[in-house]
Image 1 (cartoon, rainbow, N blue to C red):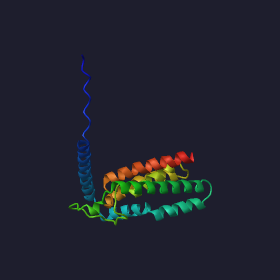
Image 2: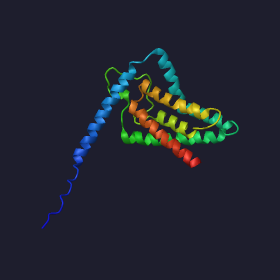
Image 3: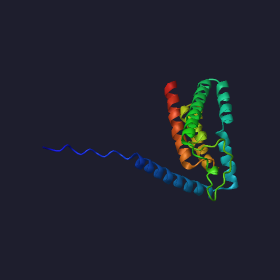
Image 4: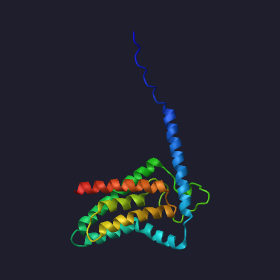
Length: 193
């Protein structure tokens, strides 16, 4: 009589959660190391430039751009609608993810040798909302005329860099924000299609 094949042992849920915890701890250490590396490049001029870029990513700035587009002729109203849909979608998705992840901002982490150059708009950092909105708008408006699409595609990574430089986010926060924003922007384009 032949024996039945041995079944694979079930994965130990405790072991897999330890693996996730270990991975998360390693990513957190890498993120902290990268953030402190960026801090070495702080200068008065760079801080002024990157502070201005971050302000361009604020909701009030996007609202002004949206109103200007809506009031212009040609493709302006259509682009204003794409911008608004992308921004709203990215804000909603990034805020949901922030509350699911609950990652504190770098300023709240007690990281030695670090101080943020900007106040944080909320308690959670993952993913970066500014970055998600900037990338969602850039992708939604990619190909828009009069250089608007190209301008937004150049502005999105600059806003992402500014968020790390100013200490509002860790590098992985902006990477995740760029992915969230890209997905939202593609969704908006597909729905507008």
